[in-house]
Image (cartoon, one colour):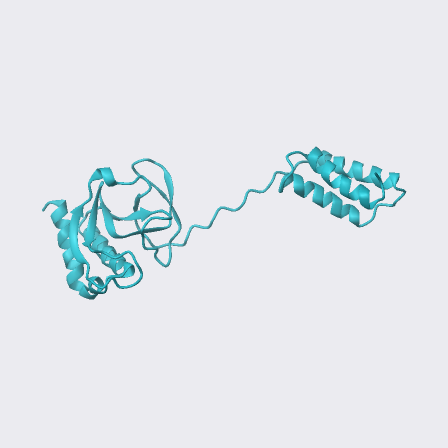
Length: 215
């Protein structure tokens, strides 16, 4: 049996088993129809998979397993998939549309979907739509923000030397606010806005010298 005919028979079988899915015709119903077709084809020895989708594309997002990083076997590119197609699958290196009039919305369409197996021309394949199987699994956590490197004690000493000198010039004993100025200066340089430590010292030194009564 040709693969296209095998896919068509699987789509029709899934519809016979649960006809109410395509009668109701919401994206979740289409997805479950597609999920059953993938299971049938894989039980027959075919490498059937879901079509991965990225943010902004029409798709169904299963309740678990997404977002997920997927390596496209054709390009080797790692793609962040936010869901899968509700009505199309990969079978080997070919894509098939399984539902005519399939609905990608969450509300019933008002007309039924029709089980089909229309091979999608290769020129319409998108490089951001890799095969995805299985779909279950824990969502991929977002990457942790990069921590700034430890700059070293000699860098911290530069800020301390300027602070102590300004307190001495003002005739003041260093107090708890030293921690404030030190923290603001280092934070502004490592995390926030200032491109260099010197620029951050200049910015915050003007603030602490004003409070110390220094010009």
